[in-house]
Image 1: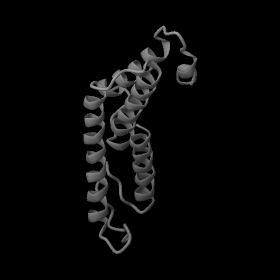
Image 2 (image 1 turned 30 degrees about the vertical axis):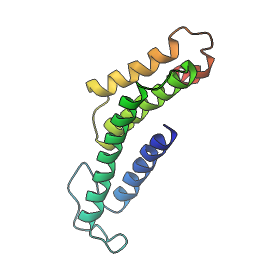
Image 3 (image 1 turned 90 degrees about the horizontal axis):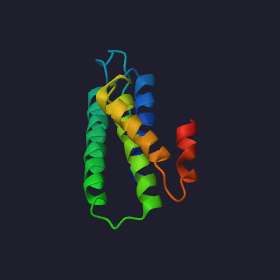
Length: 131
């Protein structure tokens, strides 16, 4: 899960770099966009979009596979919180969904539910609900 969270953060960083060069995944590319690494702005944008779709696929695969793993409550809950966080990053920040969109709201609620669900030791997720 840490690798998937790292990929989500990297794609968000890449989006900010693309924006600095006049390439916005949510809008058309400005004519003034410069070439990055000898590639056209369109090629760079398409590669970024493929990476976002690849992350979505890998997140889905992880979730399906995680249901078949023997549960360790602490690890499972932490991984699920990170999974929902990655989903929010993809939907909200990479795809530009509004904070009021159903998928973003459901992910937020799921994280909060995981944080407040009673367990033997819940303090490991309190930092998320306090933020």
